[in-house]
Length: 538
Image 1: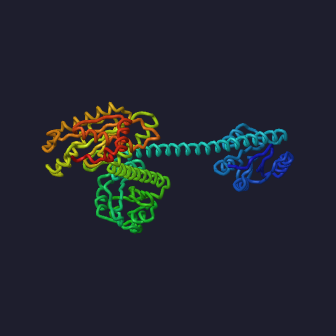
Image 2: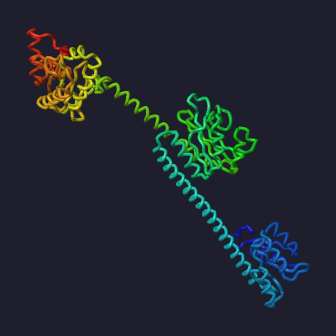
């Protein structure tokens, strides 16, 4: 096809005529109009010139020696490089049959001799204009075809990216529902093989010592015949840097082999087994977390295949997802372990209820909260009556069991989330009751005392009852900034002392102001010893 662009009314015209006079007349006529004119005197020269430098238009005589215009036109139209050049026949033949044949062999117009200048110029101009428009249309069509092809490619890439993204999301959801890393590996192997159309997937995991790669539990195969490859692989191990797998482990980078069944790939130590079952292309991708390889995923296809960067990136994304899954599992396990440690640090190992440390933290927390809200905070201190004699009579193992039973009974007596029952020390227990007045706290103390007595734990040496009993001191206050939180504990301890003094197996409840005033008077008068928790074993 002629790539020459016609500009304005000018063009490159080739005149083919064996008559020098005709060549001179036509070339002069056209050159005066600004056209570039080339002239040849026979068909063979015309074919060579048109092949080397195709013109925009050919004026072709019919009657020429050796090769007439019809044959020249036919040969030009048969040549892919010249078939699109428009040809106007020029001839003295004026019969209709000559004109019909001219059009049949590929001519687009016909001018009869002798030439009329106006007619020649008009027909030349018309054909060059048509040719120019045709070339522009071809260029526009070609440009649209390129744009359409590019658009189709972009659409396909977007659809593929969307499909891969959706697949990644579905696989991520499936992975997140797995109980452990091995189950997640198995799901990934199956999903990836099905997604990319490969035939076999396996996982290799470092041993506990981190010295070798071992064949993992999970694998996937599209055919039962590939089980042979799997069973042979189960017996193998790979140190770092040795073989295809060891190299991936050492470098922490993906690796692709076009055909593992070829002996030239000495890095793939299982090439003979791969050859036997028909596996060829292989892609290995490490799962890396904190610069540590958790596993190596390997996929095989039963055909030779050159590296495809998109597939490597896709499987890398799966490997990253698995690394995140394992990190989340590790973080969750650490969090659970920390919570368990915190729980154990706050739990009394003997009784299973909160310990003194938890009591102190909760007490100060509720003191500050009640101070902000100006609501009452109540405290119950309770003590097992005659517990020393119980231990002396029944032994320490029985004493431990008694403490456990009493602790659980006390725990059952509180109902609200903010309430706390704790082992305060030895045989002494404490109950924190936020937003509770002294009367309500006294009811809880009595319910607790009855709960313990209803355990019916025999206590033959008790001077109070045939069963184990407790005494309780109850106090309530609205916390103030000027008050020391420990003063509430001191006053509750005084109330417990009063309950013991009055015969045990009872609850004494008084206001903070009443008990604290009595405590101050006793200290000033010297009628009592300093109040501390020494009334536990009587």
